[in-house]
Figure 1 (cartoon, rainbow, N blue to C red):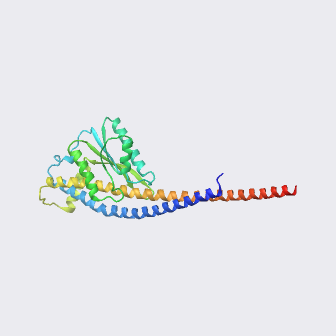
Figure 2 (cartoon, one colour):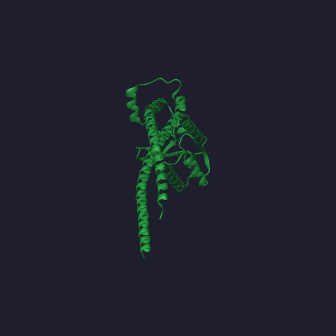
Figure 3 (tube, rainbow, N blue to C red):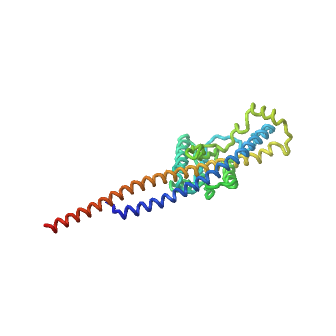
Length: 296
């Protein structure tokens, strides 16, 4: 049985740990509020970007010659998991990687080749540990991703797709539902889906609202510039969702850690009191035994 002093040291250590977890919970909560504000500020831009693409595609005579819209027989697929640079976020990173590996097995069963690109140090280290060959990794931005980070990732993905090095690009990330719930989703960013450009009924509605426009330069030339920006926007949206999910998962994990630390302190305090009482009882027995020996 541990001594009273040993238990006191453990209690002191657990209390110090609880102070750290509480501080990390508060920091994660502050970061989460900022991440949510960035997502809300970004949504109108993303919606307007899609509206602009729909209108330009409607005015274009043909979109078949645009590389990012070309659909091919899928033989090689790029999987891009969005993970974090740090741990202590519960199952945030593990869920994304577990889903990505399950996706890889499914694609290989279908006879498709898989290549890996990854965002975040945790994903890069896990893939390296499993001896996967990573085409490219991006790190150092997961806490507060900027548009330049999304631009670098989107440019590389578009480059691989336009060069026909891959036939499809899938991003796997945590979609932010709430601080307590993050859902792993899979999104195909390339090729750009035809639904993104709108159907016939949607086009007619937009004609009634916006009317006809004269485009300068030609709509096809505008789409050549818009499509890469659309991919950047989708990647940036995914990065922001992942960042908010990471902070929510970390806040929840640190809250649970603080709660567990409190319960452990209570158990250790009870054990310390029992050890102290046992020590006092033992001392009394020794005194009584000594007194009896003197009387004898």
